[in-house]
Length: 456
Image (cartoon, rainbow, N blue to C red; front, side, top):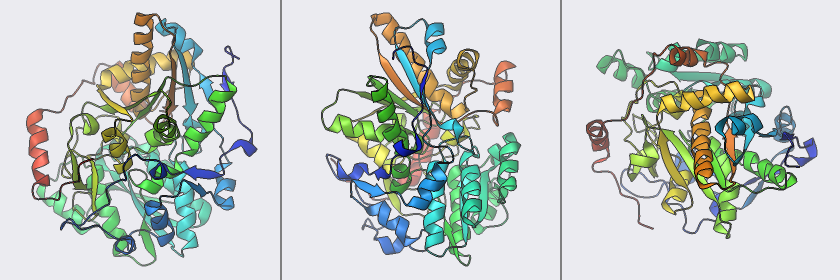
């Protein structure tokens, strides 16, 4: 089957359970804490999330059943196809085989609906009528807008201002699905007004948008907050990607030497990688790579700390690699990767030595993305381009070593709503940006006085 181009599973092959990596971790994940350093219990999260999702957040059960009504909605596009990138391999002149899981086939064009659907379902089952959220590039906002419409919920999205301006069609997609989308920071919340008073020309950040969305949720009736990445239950919902990929690779008679995903908050990376991290924990020899932008180098340059998920520090303190909750990244086009922190579970498996992390500048990513479009046809999202660039590096190394290498990447979304970034790249208007150390150290000062996570 080596010449086969893709593997498409049947509806019956879609996973009926989510995989929870917390059951297999060599050391348990440190708990979220308050500013006093004391662990936060589930009840403290109840004003923000419904209890049925909080139960998933704290669960250490290995397999959690996917409700039938959620499966019914996921089957609108799942299982997603696994492709072999034959022409991309040929253009690189590599002996490596490159496979990619195409999550761009979802209605919203990315992996995000894999968790938006169950989150909308569990909120509706709990009696919630309205959800608030933030979005960076707009992929998550679109996914939740769609999911809320499918389950009869009202949706309000706070979109990072720079992406709101760069990606107007994503805002329009949210509107088509019935959601209200506003630029963040806004004048609609106390957190937003405070930021605007201090820095009226701010490009915004996910941390700011999260503060606004949470404030809206806790001060509004019949409302909860929904997050598209970072949290344990979100990453668990995404494991349908890796579980399907394991079946598909087996059908191809292959097992990957390298698994790659881009990381902002960690959801698509965890989705493709955590089932393979489980294999590695149990003895498989496999390299697993998380790829981030040099402009927002959370895993590669941030310390492992307790930090808040938002700028107003409305969330509990989470154990994660962080650039500081007040960090405002440069307005690179990969808006979904502009987050100051990293999912605690992704951070934890990096600390455990189960994965590796690399930062790649955006011009190299766009170069790889354009070559991909020229060879494989699909135009990748700027976020996806980071995984492609890392795969190209691995393929080049295989060429230099004269060894075949089997590479699997998560093609986390298409770039059809991101063409202004491609236009800027092709017109020579983009440049690389590496976060200066002075800026990093200044941002990390916000962590002074906060509790410190326990050592492994």
